[in-house]
Length: 233
Length: 383
Image (cartoon, rainbow over all chains, first blue to last red; front, side, top):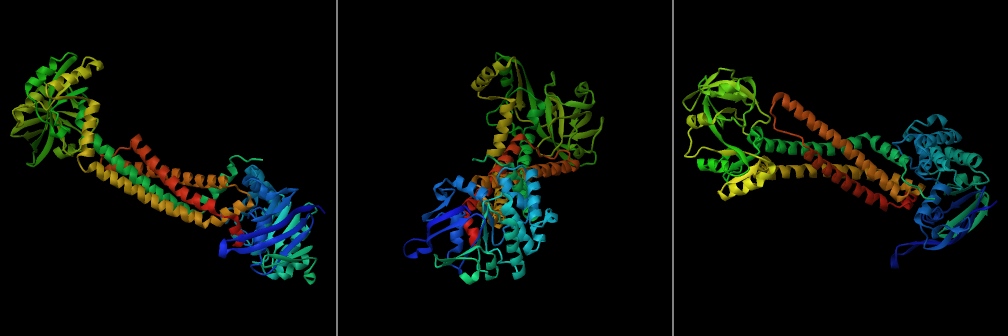
């Protein structure tokens, strides 16, 4: 398995002087293609901040994010935006689907941002909806779908640009336990492949069984990396 | 790899805008209302200004000689006869004729009185005569003969026909022709034409009688020389355009009309701006997370700016079109009831409203752009 990305001594603080809060403190790790890596820990442990830094959203104060041997944060803003668009797929906690667009149009957004012509983008979006089992829901607005279905639309949107790295932020937070497990199981079976790395931030222990590795964070520090399920943490 | 302008992004922007029907309608109504008011106010003003110069436009003389204190047609100051003689002797003058203009009381057959503008045309040339719809122009030389203008005020004389009679300052008057003019007057009273000599003898006058002297120059190049020569006499010679401008300036700057219309236009603009800016800001706020999500997915700042500018421009231009359409419709309906309804949409009105709409769109979008540029995708992750 090759390395999808490498975090080197990533550090992030907010505020200055006495008000400075250290959110992530010298965290280093590697994520590999073909694996599902969980970042777990209690609220305020720095999981989301770490996720934002490795996905090109939040600039670290110190440290590096190496992708294909190059430091992500040493590049221009446009290049970082291109990285997010081409290399990373996001599934946000609240999905952030556009209620005024159809489901297919929501999925097509990354393709449209990549300048794929509108009709082509929609055709490809419908194909990705088929991958997530929502082929017949393309014309509906997202609000007409159940929570689990909306999650699948968000996944279809995240994979539409065929990214190397998929980022999930609390994917089961808005779902019941059964639906949450089904979603993550589906992701492991159908979305993960040898050319893709999936990083999931969660504190839902019910889905730990699907992880290849689990990173535990507390107070901004990486406190351990375990292979497999919860029992190793 | 750089990405240029993305039409797909604009399509998304369009759908985000128009699919939010409530907000889109509120945005349209705000700007439409402003455009409608601006067009109505400025069109009425343009119509009033044109009406204020009706006699100048209808007579159509190239050069008008008048007392320098005259600032509108209705308040003419009669000039002594020597001015006419002097004008005729100025090199470059092809011919010069007097014009009588005053207001007289007409007693109708039913015994009621009606004020009317009386224009006295030079007896020899009838220079400045109106186009006749009925009757023969030669009949104006007949006894007590008058032409009546068939405009919106025509009915105030009891819709007279050829041969209708009336009294004017205890003189008998007889309609021998029904005429049409390009522009109706401002003051809502009917217009009668007769010869200069009859006007002077029928209507009480001061010592001098020529309200204006109409000059036809031999060539356009002679006009400045004529103006200088007239100025040396202590009078003023203006081309038709200059006279219209002088009358307009009087109404704009020396009456409250210009200020009031300007104030109303500014208020319309402010109302439209406040409604649309506030609604657009709310629209942006409601979609802020979505813009943040787009940024997180990989949209660049300039692409989001394009989306907002497109949304603002599309809304503004649509509302502009609807506003102009509504104003035109209202004026058309008004003209069905009032044929001489004094409102006129000019290119200047349209351009003024268009510029104001662009300013509204620019300010509204600027507020949205500031907000969207500042949104951090990290905030989307933090919820």
